[in-house]
Each structure stands twice: as structure tokens, then as C-alpha cells.
Image 1: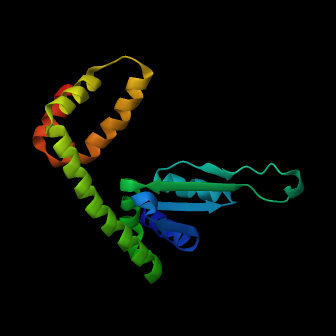
Image 2: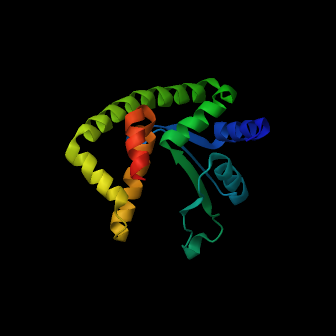
Length: 168
């Protein structure tokens, strides 16, 4: 992403964006009736565009369609860090709170996952899940667990990284 892209995204999010920590997860969300602008922001934040509300009421034909994009968690923190220097005082303070909240949460979550991984039963079940090529349900469950393991465990411990790499 170029410096110009970062500046554009910062300006647009400063005026139209939402920064917060709903349900304990840092979030950036933005809605607009201009699909091209939302698509550009989604591309820059590496997210998808969704239709916030389908307009089906025949009495409100003149209402425009609303498009939305958002990022949460690690990706939201990455975007917040990237645009922080361009933001005004109020938005900057909100971003600082979200980053500080997530930093503490990430450490707590990481420690909980390490304790779980230290349990031989849990570890064996996870390794079996890695090797399993069975049902779609198992694949979906593993995909979710795999991303959490990679994000919060593997990066924090070389022995866990070796174990997971061997299993994959």
C-alpha cells in the first residue's frame, strides 16, 4: 500500500469510519451508499464488501443501497497502526484505547492457549485433527483452530512451531 493510499484511507475513515472494541475485539467498520468507495477501502484493508441492508420496501424506492466493509482483530490493529499518525485527536485516542485493549487480551489469550497446548490430550486431539482428511465438518473445525494456533501459539514458541510444522 502506498503512502497516498494510507492517507486516503485515513481521511475517509476519519470522516465515515467507526473504531471500537465491540465484544472485546478491535474493529474498524465503515458504511456508505457509494459502492466504489467502499470497495476501494475494502481492498486496502484486505476485507470484503457486504450489503448492510437490502432495500425491498416498495414505498422507499428512492432510498439508496448501503454497503459496508469491516475488519476485526489482528487485521484491524494492523490498519489502526498504519493510519494512526494521520488521525485527529478524538479518533487517535479511540485507536490508542483499542490497541492497548487488544495488546493485553492477546497476551492473556496466548497464555491460555499455551496452557491448553501443554495438556497432552488436547495436543494429541489437535494433531489428530491436523492429520484427519475426513468430513467437511472436521475440515471446517480444523481451519478455525489452525488459524488461532498459528496466530497465537506458533509465533510465541519455537517448540510449538516445530510440532505444528511437523504435523502439517
